[in-house]
Image (cartoon, rainbow, N blue to C red; front, side, top):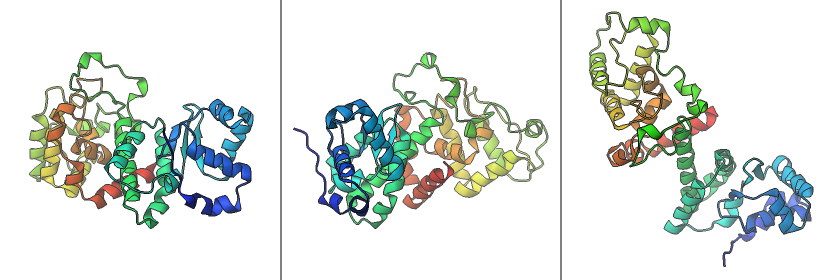
Length: 325
């Protein structure tokens, strides 16, 4: 029979002691121990089911949910998906780690429907994790950040089922909202009319790296738009130069070559196909470099994020992503 372990520390929580009514305490304990619950504290829990299990009317349950959401800031409830997130459940439900706990948490995170619930739990738990000396807390924090980053990357192109060994490019259909306009806007055209004209002008730059970039880019799949020049006084030149300053020319060349490992980027999966202007945007460049769009069968040959970047750099990227929301 399934069971849930709740740390006694629950009853020492200052907010529970000072602010909760007896009804509130019992409702919170119900949320932590209800049959549909889990150690992560994020799961589907319909209002009518809560009402049935605790003997309240649906209206009374909605009042409790609203109180715990807006007054106590202890939960988030998504009425559309009927998914609840209990912000501090992890303080009481997980006391030790190990491979089974890690695998369980990874599985539970993958089953969460509303990504915002993961983000909110992470935000609320961050202070607790910083103070905690338990290895299991650091492990859970890392798993949450990985899941948020992964979902953020996927949401930009909405290709959850794209990476498949048996991919058939004729089977793909996508909604109008397929692309993240903040990063993919005008992806098949130069970023401005000036740059469109500049592509046909003589290259006035004395740099030698730009020829390497042009040659490498134009050696990609024939379906990818070619570039003729990289002119100094264009945004394209400045952004590409910034990527080289950040990562080095060899890394930029490597990222360009990796494009050939992605049917999606080459335009064989949808109407989207990569352009140089899309590629050199900071967020897009990182995703290509890390192999987020590459075919599954090529995954073992791609750049391993954990090996390519220090943990500090990965943490900075995650925090920057959170601040941009």
